[in-house]
Length: 196
Image 1 (cartoon, rainbow, N blue to C red):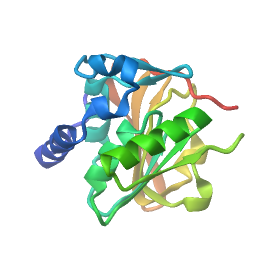
Image 2: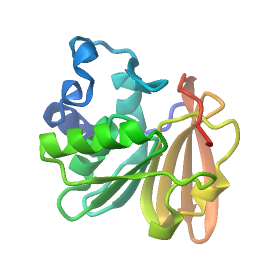
Image 3: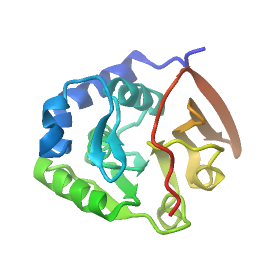
Image 4: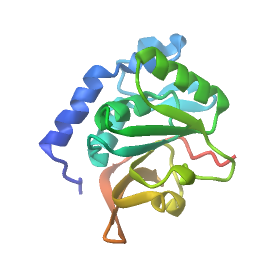
């Protein structure tokens, strides 16, 4: 069963898509594919995710102005930029990426687009950015084969994480010290999480 989202959240995500151009976050050789509703290879065994999938993930994440947001597997920084738009000037968005070349590419793309957000290189053996936690929202753009409890632990009270787990889009909410997990309808394909 599909998880319901509010019309206001849907409008906010639609506005972010209208402002943040996917093409600005693709390598020159594949920019012509920006309007295609499909994943696009961006090098280093990474993809820029399918727009309809990103749209759904952002609907489920329901970022609010002022939120502290972590973007795990930020890749080319397109999702980081979308999250920064949703969190607004009062918010704070940090992307984390394992591939050094993508860290630099993403930083360059954010700067060129005038987006206020940052990207950190992931530390080997560490999920997310525990030193910068807690976060209000965590978006994960790589598939886990298991529930990433180390990321769940980085959610603050009232926080939410959206992550593909074994191909199923999973929403994790932390409320009153308890963690609730729900699955959205549909199957998704993501590159697997890199742990090196």
